[in-house]
Length: 345
Ligand code: SF4
Image (cartoon, rainbow, N blue to C red):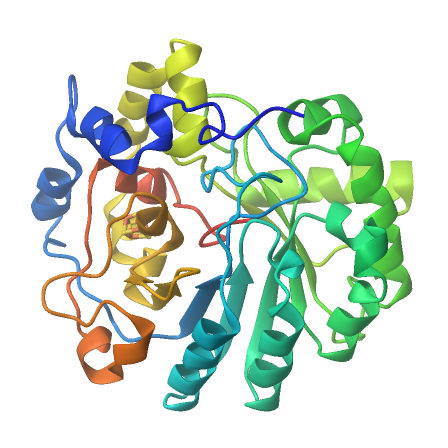
């Protein structure tokens, strides 16, 4: 299994180094200039309808494109105290959706408690699941638990072919993913009228933009059904963000400049108006508040006067905050935009 950038002591494990690299716009305009030309600068929140909780960086996989630099050696994890502050903050609002992510969020000892509490408050809960975690012996009963609490699952699957999936997510991961998908289908996930939603997330294996969502969704449905008897509800396409391990991949493979230009050339003002940070608040494992999971990984907390820790959660101020934007934001505004809105484990 590859090591995380942090474990390798790689310079790009540092958010400061990533931001330095991203700030150098050679051959394209800075993101905020394009945003301004499109009449969207400064970008402002339009309210909060998604409460995203990133419970930490521990994961049982070390996928090549992970923007969290998650892996088995990461020790950052949300404490019960911070988890309780999240639920107290959530209870002060009517935010309808709670989106739990990581790492592999299920490996946090407070994951099930968070799901129970959010579900108990009547909120719709989403779990960004890497699928293989459902097969870990210590996580026995996890799939049933998710079904009992009607948790929507968003699972990453970059290909319906084993070779491509394993190349991005690790040796043997495709086979485990299919086994986990079968288990979820047996519980009713992805089946008509079950009320249990199973969505897949596709991100390109290389330095290119995702194809049109409808076409690739139809292709995945046909191939997964025919080859493996797997059913799912929807497939979302995600643009790989030029941060963390994908950034390192771009630099190492000599694709960085070309990829950034490709993202900038595909800037779409309509996608810019609808970026997820405008309706999301993202809480990190230590309780710091961010506009999105990507800003979280770049150490760019909410700014411009809004309170930046969950213990000071102030829905009125946060609902109208100015969003912190940098050049990685081109990943959200390219083409039709990333439709899935955030981390997929
Ligand atoms: S990276 Fe974050 S802040 Fe930038 S546009 Fe995307 S969601 Fe918004």
